[in-house]
Length: 348
Ligand code: SF4
View 1: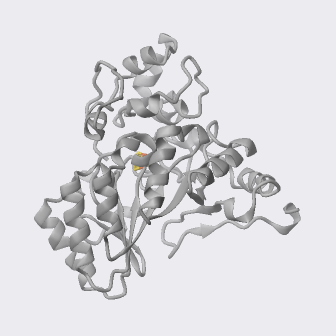
View 2 (view 1 turned 60 degrees about the horizontal axis):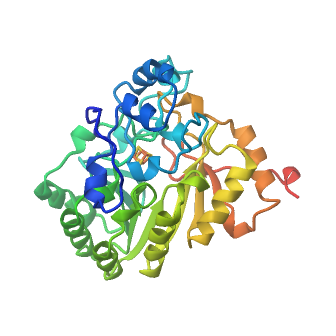
């Protein structure tokens, strides 16, 4: 993703700001964030060092859900860099854990699975999640002009087995409506593409991005549209987010959530149960719970597979099957995500 220079900016209320204004205002210096969240200044040096070349970025609409003064807040832990990020990683943690740069046949496309391709629509996000597996992705090599984008779509056109296109990034919804709608129209013009999947964290972090114009355009598509949002903790879903999620569903768009299992954020049964329940209240089905991808800078979030299985066994005592996310790991070179089964002897 882009790594804009962190800057100290005045923090002002979100009410009345467009999503574009909120997005433009989302980079924060470590100092501004500490002051606004009333956290001790002694954290500053470690925070600045941890951020390194992946600056702090979070919109105020997200920061407002963090409990001030609480360094353990599960939302704060997703955006505040710890000193561990700049330490030598344990063995197995690498810059490109999913081998995406070797599945990048032409700029802008990641093609790992037989019948679906992923388009890197842009390299910018509204939030910098400290555990992100793409934090080192070479977005600069994948930044395309509009015309290059249209040419790149020729790759899909020539492969009739591709029936699903996934818009990813960065976050595809940080693009303007014009750019996004042009791209959607170009994909719609490829007859063998049936589904359009949009992977985005924007409805969670800046719910104002879910505008009538966006929903109208997507609901008019000839493609089946699936939006996969990304929330890791129930506290991320406040009233504005709930409203945006329900509006997406009411527009006829399939709505799923994927999460990452993160130490200190959601690695306890209560957090995972509340997340599934809260998602369902907002008409979202839990889809995947990912084990952390071993990316350099994120090892302190890692939860072992053994502990993850034990947690899944625990939450399935409470949750109905349709609210159980699939526990998965993505392994470089495999033709699909790897499901992690819960052993029978750990089930009820
Ligand atoms: S997890 Fe998604 S939203 Fe977060 S930094 Fe990575 S690409 Fe951006």
